[in-house]
Image 1 (tube, rainbow, N blue to C red):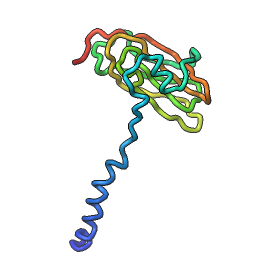
Image 2 (cartoon, rainbow, N blue to C red):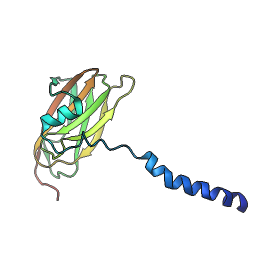
Image 3 (tube, one colour):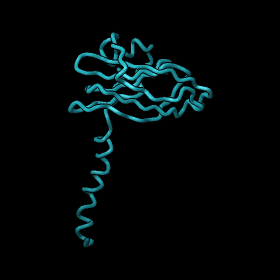
Image 4 (tube, helix red, strand yellow):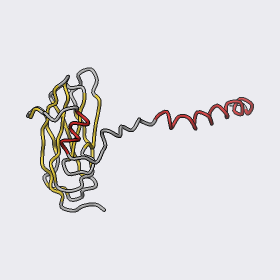
Length: 145
């Protein structure tokens, strides 16, 4: 690239570098991440407290987590839903993961989560207007600072 062409493009590149990070950031949904009890979190996020228990959602997590700051969790489902959620019952903000699904995708996700203390994990798949849930209990042996 020639020096003149480089210098002509420098202001444009600098402007994009300044604007792009704010454009790429996701909007913070304060309503979903409030410090509320689990039932209120279900109501805030899902719009209902009525969940249908199912065995079509699988949550793979260790029965005992050695470190509460990085608990490995895998959630998968044979329900073709439009949204996948993961809640931790005793966290200050129960919703820890939310993902929109497109074109009737079968959800499957693996992630590490933080847990405040030993509690139930709830995997929720929303299909149309119904919310399906499965849960598993994880004991935390050492809490992270």
